[in-house]
Length: 399
Ligand SMILES: Cc1ncc(COP(=O)(O)O)c(C=O)c1O
Image (cartoon, rainbow, N blue to C red; front, top):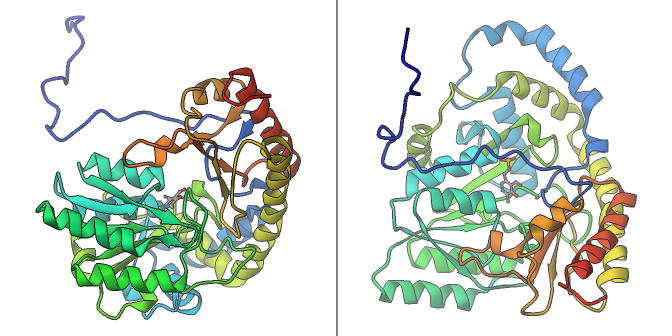
């Protein structure tokens, strides 16, 4: 019989394998922490019908492992959409389907990042990307933004400073449309100047357009990718916000030489073909109708959040009115510590993420991101007021 000592892997771990976390997302009563879409407008019936149709027609294809780059008909649908909606000059050949855009982001980061490489981002950014950049030991440098996007003079000054320090900047990551967590959409002028500045320094732009379809106000602005003729822009998109995060379906568009490197980091024998078949069959008939329906629901939730913010935080915080996307970025006076009570707030039923989680330098405890996509309008309204009670109880804001 084997001994009772447990086998230990301790001395066997690869040097570059840090400890991860088996995190599951918590579900507090009022959940403003995660950028989930609206559960009531998930196209469940449409997807079920589409799945049946696709399986009856092409189901036997599932006996093969899928193409590494993903289902051709879905890649064609994505390419058509990006040509039509984002003015990109691409074909299905340029598209790779991934397990959420998170996988694409990780593949690109792994392809381009050596430990210590400098990466430029907005001063606050999607924490999943920030985590991946840190995972591969990038030196992440945030650049100051205003309501129009990253400030060109700040970008130029940062690049010149880094150059002076002998540091090599590998790429510039941006979320130009409904920036997560800041909420703004970068203007056309800013997109052009970002491209020009990055181009003059020989730096590629990594454009993450995760929220682009969730627009319910303001003018659409063309993709940075569409403004570039030199192959300097990498683009990623996602079906998480217009279908569902649980579908784990996203995509990337990159120059061939980068795609070939990135593919070496794609594991798991391709992307879920079953989900891809259902999504393609559904979207080819109902994409824009579904997006409209979803946005009509989101605007009501956004308005419920803005109304409750006005009533409960009118004297203590500032925020801009988002024209799309899933979140509001709240700014409290300098010195307010929303990081200190975040865990307690979750425990008391109100989930939010504070600014430090989105900041490369770990600053911004006086900011919070509140996502309004998932709770009903009534729960959004009620939950913001509950947040005010929690913050008052713990002395973060005055009653
Ligand atoms: C800006 C941004 N990019 C990418 C993602 C990743 O999305 P997914 O991996 O679900 O496609 C998210 C998720 O919230 C996000 O906010």
